[in-house]
Image (tube, rainbow, N blue to C red; front, top):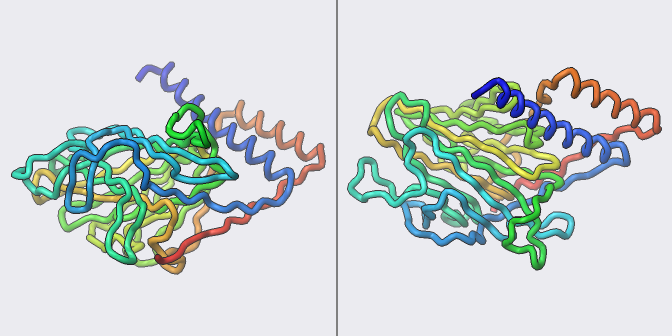
Length: 317
């Protein structure tokens, strides 16, 4: 990538982050705010399901669309999810039943559900990593939100900001011969996260512009918070997540499953530890100067910022 393209990319991230800071700062300056995370439901996929695996029906498309994933301030919200495949990963395909380590067709599993008390209306996904000791196994996805109210339903024309969003990423654990991980980007409006309170919970590392969550390399039940993290976003129109696995042995093709719980109903609050506040992305001197000017303007105008109080909705089904 050229220096010019790198600079343009950095500037874009700074602009996106600055925009969120300005909007959030303006809201904070007006009055105390109580935010209620918008629950997501992945049960109305527009794409056809074309395959299946041990966990449910799958689609062989890498870009999928959902109607009515949420309602925010009287607005119906649709969602588009775009996937990028890493390396030789097998995803969104119909797999040969005679293939090594066969669990079924890889791809998204919409409306993922399990036994009573298990997941409902979640978004699962199965992929096959290829190559022992390869660091290029996995998929990256972007969840984008659109106004789907009335005649706009299913149009995906007008991006929309969600006031707040809280999702659980779960079943990121591993087995004896592989461990799993995922990245969440700060620039999407990520403000805090929770990990399980067990000794083998995901390990979170702040990388500056993203948070890396690494699994324990041990298989847990999908309802065990040891393999889960809760991500809290404010004022977001898109969420970028990157999933992967590190394989050290076993079959050359390794099946990996994870899922997204959009309403936190799979877990109980006591399953997780205290929230961890996400530090801001380091900004350039020009952006810091601009933010300082906006802050000064708000102070001079007599508008004091007030804290946000988060209303969490964790609860077992």
